[in-house]
Length: 258
Length: 258
DNA sequence: CAGTGGTCTAGACCACTGG
DNA sequence: CAGTGGTCTAGACCACTGC
Image 1 (cartoon, rainbow over the protein chains, first blue to last red):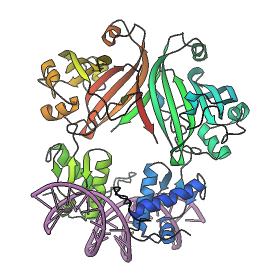
Image 2 (cartoon, rainbow over the protein chains, first blue to last red):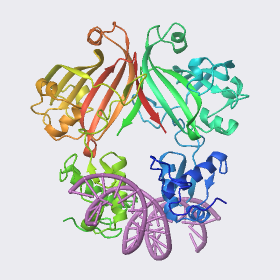
Image 3 (tube, rainbow over the protein chains, first blue to last red):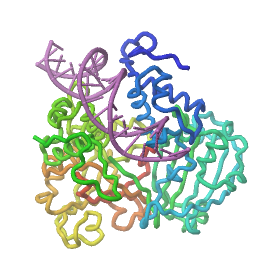
Image 4 (tube, chains in turn blue, cyan, red, orange):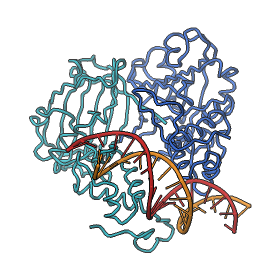
């Protein structure tokens, strides 16, 4: 049972200079977030109904509703009318690759064949400074490094290097990666308890070097789309640094602005 | 005065097979959208208060609120507590280039020097099939074609071709473009009454050709980020097709996923 | 049919802005 | 101080799902 928040209590005295006013629904959102984080409800499971949560937190349904609304727009939970509200998951989600924005130039965006994966490397190494920084680690700490190639209909399209914190991903191996069917992030959820919640990407155009070119079956110097991604779990803790090189001959990176 | 919507009226009989249920706040949103579209309130102006709109539409404040909430998340209006709700505008907006995602690799994202623009070309041409399609025009219809280079601190960084429907942009010239201070989309608003509301982008890595390379001061074959954009106004009507070639040597295209 | 999320209302009060 | 958006409540009813 959580302590019941009173209207506008805001624990402690207000700091000087900081407005530090957080509405009730934000506090409720924080409490729900804590429960998600601590695993009170696991990915794919249903969370308590709005009425139950309202009773638990001693607030009205509308206040819980607004809190859940925000969690839903952040894709942390999924509302399903008539059924309930569920913890978002990368598995069994209609969008198999939630963070992959590379789509075929033509054809239905939904009817995409699943990619064939070939793991080329998976080993524990010490993080260089360049890798440690985006992962918020110290240089020299253990990380798992993965290199793989994704092919669509036999055409090698994505060359990807991933670095994962060694402590959280102890036991990750090429075999486990190769044997897994479905999204990689789904495996991270189920096997390592790591939920990727959001990500930041940096895109660049680069030229394929002598090592990369044959893996993607393009000539050396061929322009490739470089996509660096930091994937974050709860509380914006980075849990993956990834660099993908995308062939954009017959695919493109799609982005909607508003 | 608008006709007052009754609770759950949904004009006409429900179509067979289609659920066709639209909640009251969606209808209100549609009515507000109409007023925005028809220019009842101009960009930058304040729209009536929630109470006024509630009275006008004969609904409660909460229903108007939910309608405006959606318009705000779509960036069509901007709420300012204590002041009112304002029609979004590309001018006088803190984010000067709302749709430009290219940022310096290092340094404050906000403290960006304004770009220098050099208009290289601005003329009326007949649309080819490739240009007509994204603009939803027929091949052969008149379009205005603009080519320009954007430089940051003297470094040419973006080579951009834009195509605009000839009828809506009658009178656009290189002089007017060159003389304008501020975002281009702000000029389109104020001078042509065209509000870009959202956009779709397709990104690719390409190699600079013999014509493009000298304009960006890079060697032929240098990898460039190609950004094709369709900018849409109300009702998803396309009003601009743009192709930018970005140098990504010391800048990158930033994207946040969630 | 019961249970869930979704909509709508009416009213009270709070926080912010500007004159 | 009045006017605006923002929060919160309590209660009613609707739409959807699955038993």
